[in-house]
Length: 431
Image (tube, rainbow, N blue to C red; front, top):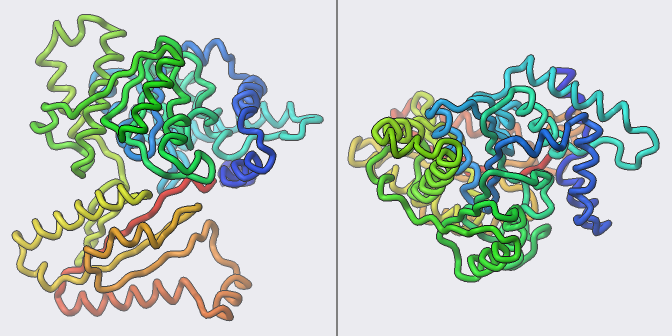
């Protein structure tokens, strides 16, 4: 508890971004990160020796990283995986062999980094790193201490100025599907966003991507030439039609295909004859990695009694469309299996953060024909008594919404109806 309490005192990522915008110091972010790593006693030469797969993108980068990690783990490699945001516990962001970092190790590595940084903060304006930057430093420290064979690192926001871009010598870089998101930071056009995402490209390091918008792909090509990074566009792998992917959704075929190419290139670099000499074993482990990949909150179903929750973190208009298609397909298939689906009640739980436009996102959900909709506020801490008093005076109380929703569930439960809830959490790295 003390560890989490101390971590939460660090400046949030949203605040760091806002400060950088106002001071126009984005270009200094990697210089600051380099210095922070040194203060945390992370040897930059050791960091450069880590075998890292670095992934940016707007949509699908978390899934692509998860598939990559799972494939490599099933081939016997010790994996590290850094991602954001977390769903329940912050330990989810730093994984070893697919599992969130153990509590004791999380505490040990946290205090290693925190104490080193805290003891060297004299006469420094930006004494301690923000929340996301600190966790990035801690992830690198963890991967070095755990001696992982490979680390899969997901970019936070953008790429060019993201603190993960302290990585100077990755094994492979990849850019997933691009779209408009974080426009207040990355720019309002697809070209500006593509430029930023491609900022992770490194000289002579393979850069992989999926089929992109023509304007976005043109920028990726220009950046790859500028960085002397060979750019490879990965089309959907035919083998994906023969495997049940661990992450549902039709777009996952693109993410899985990209992950397969990433892993094949990485393993060929590690052991040139691994795939050619053992094709059957390779395919078996490849399919096991894809099938058993677990990445919660992405087209996920959770059943609780008469209630079936459909969870997704769609956060752009395009990903809302994908989420809607998945939900409607599930409803259609369910109706064919169980006639009670015709009497089911559909409820939307919707949350949006950051600078996104909720109305634009909600338009894509209209075709789902929900019976009820609940719009969840962004509450990052338990409400105090004064908060509750203020919310009642303003005519709003989140506990009343939850109470009413609970009554609704109970009433339909006793009516022997099925109950479907689509929870669309428009994820944002708020810390």
